[in-house]
Length: 104
Image (cartoon, rainbow, N blue to C red; front, side):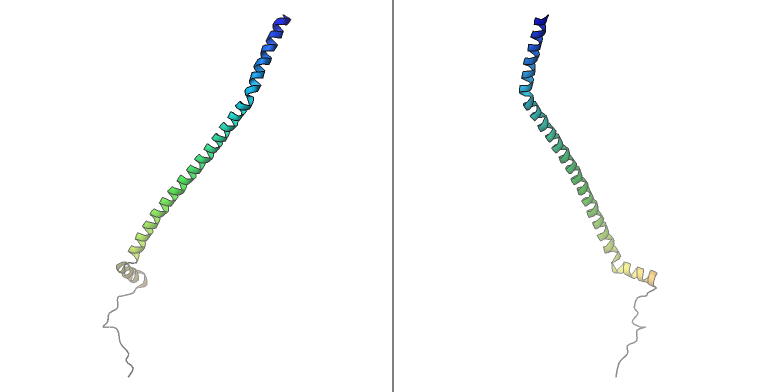
């Protein structure tokens, strides 16, 4: 009985010796795996942020083009004349109604 127990303990000691022999390599692999996972997470987070920024840039560029078109339309002489009549009650200049003062 004691001999069996002694053999079992010797086997356990040998197996623990092998385990502790490879423990630094196992810990190194686990640390490297953790660091790679952490880097990957950080990289994916940055990629997502860049994609959002690019979408925002595209949206702003589209808005700029739309505003430039609106500006071009609003500054056309025809539109300016329409707004002047509608909002400021202005009429086009009629040269028959203009009197010139001549200093003699």
